[in-house]
Length: 307
Image (cartoon, rainbow, N blue to C red; front, side, top):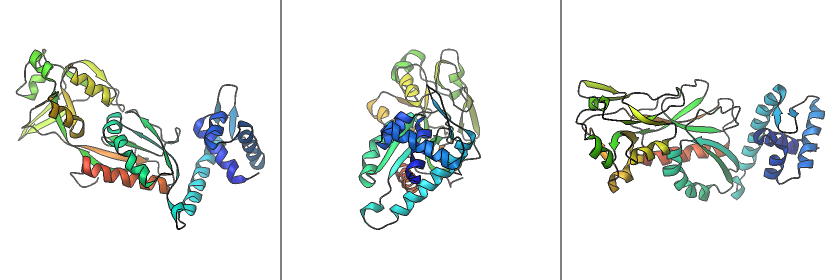
């Protein structure tokens, strides 16, 4: 038994939840993957996986072993990529999760430049605004707007999203143009609600002008938990939106959105990249983090010192 192949096969089964899928990603037969994991369990004298006809679950011993295996595999990758020559480029599979508008408007359009630099890095990108369990879901890092409340994660401040208030011309024709944020609490006005993953509910938006501070709750006919759907609802005239500059810019230029309350200020939303403290920061993760920092410096530069 090749111990490296066995550990790699075991790790891939844990990550995919399937011997068949693990075999496909490793370009091996399912029988070979099964035999490698069985030989590994025999050598360790412990059951690493519970198998049923429908799914594969990792045992408690297997989960602990997996965390050590992925660090060891990452160390081996780093040792190989530290050698001189073309083979020094980072390589391997990177699992990330990012907000849907950030993926659609900034990250995905720029990925060609990343892959031109690092052609051997394969990115599995989850696109969501949900809370991700980085350990259980075997995700290397997440990018999220707002403060990171999970104190167990290492969070790097990579940008600040400047916010503004907007509405579609059709909405303003029906409801009128509000002159003061408090008017959004009137019965004839509506906002588009955004359901934050951490609370499952829409939160008020704080706005300030001089010494006047207003928290707008507003009424909504639609609340969503996805950034792209939130933007689409505003463009459809379903209510007033609070958007970062990168999401509103093109629609302002086309006239599909109109800015409101331009003499009021909103706090910027910090953007963080977070990863588990016990997850080895491999070469491929380091270059991805550096690339995100470089990208956000152009699209949403940090306005305040990193927290």
